[in-house]
Every structure is written in C-alpha cells, then in structure tokens.
Length: 450
Image: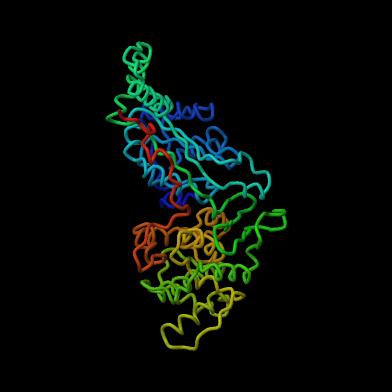
C-alpha cells in the first residue's frame, strides 16, 4: 500500500494535527467520548476526527465507531469537511457529516476557535448482530456539543432569558439574575450571538454497509431489494421483498432497470462515451498484460494497444463486448447484442441523474472490478481490498495511472465520467434533513412578546 500512500491515493487529504493546543482539545474530546487519550504529539484526522495513527496506538481502529454502527466524531476545524472518511461502515456517514458541517459552518467555526466539538451519528441500533437488525435503522440524528457543553449551557441560558422576559417578578429574582450572569460568562451574549447547532435528522432508506460481507439496501425505491456482496444465504431472513448476490447479474440488471436507476454510457448526454469505453478497454488489457508479466511502468495508451494486439487471443469477454460497442459507435458497425449475462454488460452502464447516483455507481463499480478508475473513485473499500491481490506490475501501473490521470483533476474526471448535462445538486446518499422545530422558531423556542 506504500505506493498508494506516497502518491496521495490512500490517507490523502487528511487534516494534520500538530499543535499542542489542538492535541489537548482532541484528547479532551476523546476522553469525553470514549474515556481514552493519545500520547502522540502529531497525527492526522479524517472528516470524523478518526486518526489512523491514534487507532494504531490504541490498537483499536473502531475507537470512534463502536461495533461499526455508532459513528462518533471530533471536530477541531471546519476544514475537516473536505477530508475523506476512513474505515467506512455505512455509505451515508460522510455525506451526513459533510452536510452537518456545511449547514453549521459559521457556528462550528466559532465553537472550534475555543474548544473541540464532539458528537455522534445516533440511531436506534447499538449493536447489529444480524443483518436483519440493520433494517431497524431508519433515521440518523446528529448530536454535538463542545467538551465543555457550551451549546447545552447556551440553551439553558436561553430558557432563563425567556423566563426573565416573561415572568412579572423576574426583575426581583436575584438567584435567576446571578445564574444568568454566571452562564453568560461561559457562553457570551446568546441574544446577539446565539450559540446553537441545528439539530439535524436524516432518513436512511438506501445505503451500503461494510458489515456482513457488504450489503446494498434499497428501500426507498418503487421495487425494494437488497444486494449482498457475499453469500446471501448467510444473511438469514431479511425484511425486504428481494435479496440478490453479485452473481445474480440478470436479477440485478432487472432491479436497476425497473427502478430507472441506470442508463447506457453510449446514450448519455454531455460526455465522450467513446473515450470512456476506450479507457475501460485499456484497463482490461492492463489486467491481461500484468498476468503475462509485462512491465506496465509508465504505459501509455499506445503501449496498451500494442499489448492488446500481442495478447489478442487472451483478451476476455469484457474487452470483446466493449470493442463491439465502440465499433458500432465509431465505425458504424452492427449493434452488439450485450445482455445482462454478458461479462461486459455492467461496464456499459452508469447511474442516472437521481439522489442515489453515488450509491448506484458504487454498486456498478463492484460489478466491474477491471475498471480500476471507477472502482477507486466510487468504492475505495473494494478498491483497496482488490489492490492487495494484484501483481506488482499491475499495482505499479494502477498507482501511476491514478496519480497522473485522476489526482491532477479529480473534479474534471468525475464530471467527465458521471456528470449530467442538466444542472443538478451534488449527488448525495441521503435526502435533505427533516426540518425541526429549532429551524422554525429559533434556537430558544418561541418567545412571547408583551
């Protein structure tokens, strides 16, 4: 994995924590959440505040994610919103954290200037001993406060201010006034500068989980189903009409089609479909060439074409199907009949423009493991586990390609592959948060006016 780390393809874009003040704040938050502390004086954190160095020191990669179900987080800076999420157990977690940070950015900026913010993505399931238990997770609520309880203290002060305004004898209540002054010293003027965080709740209908060998759950579609990354028989009975595994390609294809979740790349608007298909063909050639012991270091498209000719008899059905589609597109050849049983079928698809496009592209990436670029972009957990099985020749080629072709323009590459012509919001794996009363009446509730 050192190739990936050196090229910024693994543990990239993490936030470095190396000041004594931030380390002390992190330890207070860590003590608050898990009764643990780190002795390190410098480390890196992801969007949730998880640090691979601290995890290694504690011998616990789940020190902020008990049982892989309850993701806790530590925010030292709002800059964490751009960081990745490591040790992902639910595909929705990073989207929820990013949405929470962005929606409360001004408030979090003020709070983290003085203290760390600690919190949890709360659901009703604490331990998932069976796959069926995952279906009890319906909503994710974000709870957060500073280690000193600044937000809760401000809420208490707000209630006192309301009492002071509404009760006739409050002007003569010396105890109430003294308590208000004492709390105001900790929170500042909450009337002019409210210290509050939006209480946000997210629906969790469609998601992927790393638990139980990997499982895709689609409940928020017209025809619900679950798709298992491993043996579906080991999952037991699940409270959903249909369960497939990755070998049931025809059933998965039908599920994606009847729910209108996918479109053929060749028919997609606003992209260079032929170029995308050519690149996928190159990835297949690289797989074959690496097995033949070819040195792929710095291999160009021309080099891969030459290797493709050299090993033409060894190219698999994935390549043959894509080549036939390219001939139809570029040269007016006959339309290739590629069904869901054909190994090239899922290589010819991408997600349509909908709220769960990221999740569908993630599933397609796992169904098309030879497309190393889509696998890396859409399903890093599957990419890293697959990468470990490759030959050194392929590892070198893949790391070099992603460094040269993807790292230099991540946004441009994503737009070229998955962008849609019509303007759209950034694809999210969670719907907008459920409105709460705080948004409607303010952080301290309704205030009666005389």
